[in-house]
Image (tube, rainbow, N blue to C red):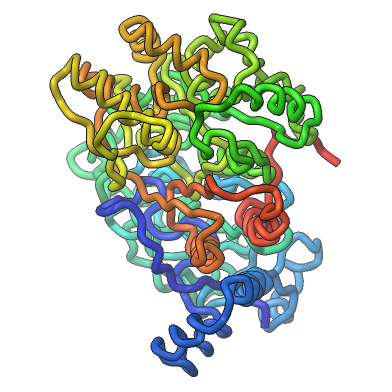
Length: 611
């Protein structure tokens, strides 16, 4: 029987890292983690000591192939099934061919199969289904700013309970939805649900103060499934002394005037997954819910990527010519791993589209290169040449990521607050801009447990360590503190004014970084580290936490960790990096990476050309 399941997650994230307000627990695919039958049987038959002994006598390549086969087996389990008792009992739901059955934990659910699927549109569809049912029954309601961002909330009066339940039950007999008692916390999704198209399910919510309606949605292969987190809650507010009282806490108020007329408000106001200024349908609400709150981020946030096509013959020739003068660089500054493309950018953009729909615009900074699959006609993406942002054109061509990063704030039209992504960084689940910024404009940064080595920067240092030492020296001389921690390899929240101030305050070191063609011992790491430390000491950046994992493609455990990440989808961010491989390693890396990325991000983004 094909199933949508997950294996147990034992990956470590950053210590103490909390889930974001939008997605506690797994936001995609499963409601509770469950071992695959294959992995469970393997662990049951062989004790840990035996498995460890086997690992000692089997080559890394063989183990990688076996674990990769298990990973693919997991993906093959994540398929949709169009048979079963539900299909026989409710054939009307399956006549269109647009729904199928999925095994989710111990239950089988009817899911809508959609070619274009993302969390924000899933949330909107569930909300519109409930609104349509209430409108059709003539029931008044108003939207509430709930505590969760992936789900929506509509309020009705307790006096209308019977009519509301009839309307929603009728809806579920037309469009197969699921019903649950929503938790009073308003932040966590319900753990289970019952079929709303079965009459007996409605007896379980006859006295509930809040109910959730969910319509499950999945991509065509069943890898990506959106469930309870994106449902629509209906709250029954009771009347008291001329007011309506909420049955649970929300972001704004526990009571409204019972006779207050409804007022329209943009739908984006009710979820932080949408940008504050996003256009869209208006929702009826009450005046208190239209107010801007101190936590609301109302400024635009753009994203900047840096990218290189290392397969371009012209670029290769230019690099080879520059390499002839690269005699005083650490080998890590010029090895193939620094420049190899495995199409990570395509999947990173997919992760951005799915999980950060609040981003205003994307800028792709390149050496006059454009990915063949990129749709440059999309108005939300702009390709920026190095020539447009380098203040000194004699510094080009450059193959130094530190140099390129030092010039990002010169991008024309870039928002004051923005995120800087490397193409090997992926958003693992829906996140809100508050994960990276405070609403007053302060940026957040994420210190790593890795330490900056002491000593004088030299060519023997890995480039990242040399740059960290140089950053330390500047902060030490200006602020009197000693930097000891590196930064996580995550999206970097940046401010243009801080970057400009760094360029002016440390002008000599900044110019030297920009002029160095390969990463060298005199570099500053401006965007990925110095900005955060300087911003902190000048009162414009603060440390924070994030659910994160770093994976090295050359590490023995990467196959196993990729399988777990795919199964649980419980990280805000993960990075798949490599600093020591060369081109002969590329086929094996693609064999490992491609199935994972296709399964994790199966839905093309609007930034890709359509076939």
